[in-house]
Image (cartoon, rainbow, N blue to C red; front, side):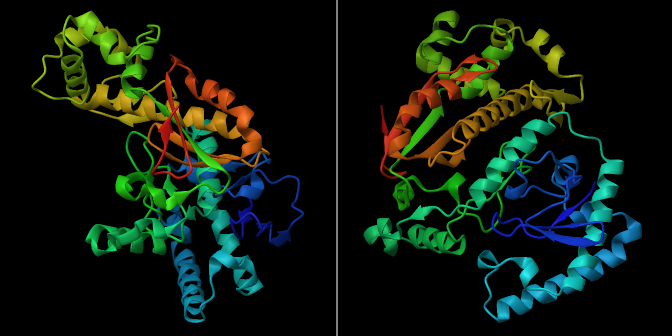
Length: 391
């Protein structure tokens, strides 16, 4: 049965269900809602937001509910403006404690009707489980403030980019907010107002300190090329990927590295015929591309023309492979003090507590063991994000 969460913060547990508000104790028959909240972690719930591919409630609202929904939104905006004027921080308060109960009931009733409409009209994505697992992780990350040391900027604040970054960090409240649907291939972006983890200047990474004892970074070596190799059914090379490729082609390592990336990303300057033959490209694309839609190993569907098809296949598969490994790592860290602090493309950073040190080898092994074979993992450790050292 459909229900609506009243707030998505872990300590603000409240839902609307069949005309009533429930706090702490929820009805047993609830099974579908709009979006994930951390207090729903252990419940079997379907999320309309994932069915709708990340569209907003405005986007999926049926015409019959458009007027009443806009009316509720206008009242909601008025309440938010009053909170700002009164200097009430929603991060520190539960939304349902700040607005009249009758408004909550009316808002949630309309929202529940929109959610029902989504489940009635949208098909469940084939990659739903991957999306749901990732959504729970990025929500968990978004609720946790980074341990930031702005003193790490030191004397560099006379530099414009340093001052700009410091202001951006302050506005973010030290929270990373990923967008699950920010790119065509599934690679995560961040939403406006987030801590800028995906484009953080390397010179200033030292501002991020672990909450526990130290950071452990796990980073795949040449993830996209290894994804291509895995998709062809070949065993993963244990040695350097570019050395392996250079020997097969009879060229130098530098030439092999430059050529394969140029070919993979669609450069017209590279003769792709030998790579197409080397990797059995025709057979590979026949398996995953029907001429208009890519359907990758993880069942993600992407519209594509012929020119972009290989690039989209490799990028999306590599991205989803990393997300799949993140879900496994997150399960391994359940009920531990250690946690996933953040991830940047094909690497993740774990905020490790000393008592969990014995888990490190298991974490590496788990991250390495993918659906496409064993991927070598680079491991770095440090007392801040800017000073990680390979081990």
